[in-house]
Length: 279
Ligand code: FE2
Image 1 (tube, rainbow, N blue to C red):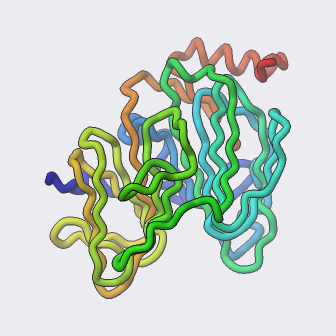
Image 2 (image 1 turned 30 degrees about the horizontal axis):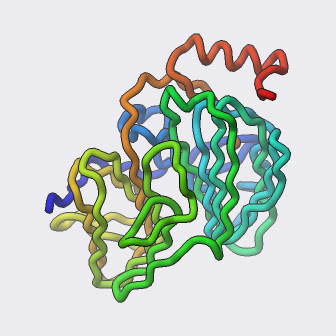
Image 3 (image 1 turned 30 degrees about the vertical axis):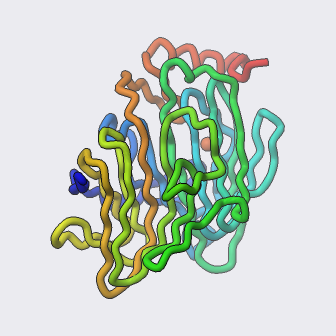
């Protein structure tokens, strides 16, 4: 058993996005290619609706997947495929932009403190121009593995024999939401060479001998076959996300991520002249 150690910690940074949404960015453009195949993790939510109501009006994506997970709150969405709906308390939207999608994501007024995450997963060269695909997963369809030490929601990938509802993944990955009780240990087997990170959003965890990690911090781990996390006197809730690195060049501008600058130019040209969305 080769237990993963901490490679680096990334405190989430206040960031202004969309039409003026105040959120916290765990990692993004500056960190490429450290999190390969992942590009970005945003943590959004607030008790002040002014922080999120401006939303993310119509914008394009190409070459990536965006995964939105709402813990609490509501986001209305609509896209060029004709999908329209609400991502609410515990729901996930797994959107594969592929060759191109234009959508809007508008958080709705919520009483209390809303909380949600958006993860960007890069697509490999061979899949960047695949037909766009949208999957909405309701909270009730996400299995929870209940153990003495923890409750683990399996959104994608596999945990102790339970598979997540998002199958046929473009990139081999795992996405877990772990609620670990106080004074417990959580472990999970992962492929040794995959990129694996944790994002603590409640309480605190301990990794290795002594390192206490509080909420709003991304923990990027070194290679190894096991992730092991402890808690002390308080429990914790964290995302565990892992995936197979692509090892390809990244050409990234705004909401579009390709392999080369020429492909980026073409994408923006097509967006300007109205040919961005295929068929
Ligand atoms: Fe988007």
